Image (cartoon, rainbow, N blue to C red; front, side):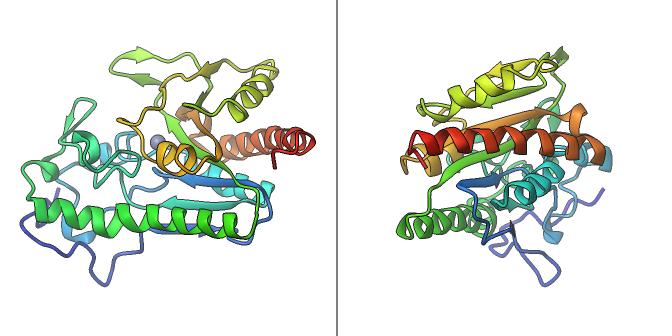
Length: 267
Ligand SMILES: [Zn+2]
């Protein structure tokens, strides 16, 4: 384990670090705009491994296991623009308000994150400025452009959840997460519940709130876009075969939703 320099450095990235934002299919014609806050588990070189063993850095506390493969394939199937974030949620969580205590978690589930203990405001600001801000700025820019061009835009925020949290098993295969939008989530729920093999969570295993979420409240609700979050259980998408299967299934469901929204003239 290498606990990097977490002192008062105001520069997070060096020449070897990749940009935080990853985009796919930027010219995609689908009304669905896909986001993926916990796509990657990269750590800036200067932070070492945050003082954690590899076994912790591959767990769900570091990223949304399996969702990257689903997001990539779904973007292709739907011809939808995907905006994803490459850095670990342990560096900074891009789906938390930066003011929330869990934005740079000192503890995740039962794991203490040594590299996040007692960091300076300057170091916390650097994580926000170099990872969180560019990612959300890019989503804002893309939504701005789409609205300017009168391109219909439905925000879909992709996540995955751990099969057991703090020792409690979760029965759902997939969950929809929503807050105020009353147009898209009921449609999505209806179609997911029509799949005979699925246990579907309705705002389970999480519900969206302004305190615990950022992407849906800021880019969906505040912009007046139809929006939903999706959470897929991680054991179902742990390998490529599962990721492909789920992408195909969701692509079929979203194609049906798009048809319905078109007949209702909502897109
Ligand atoms: Zn997530």
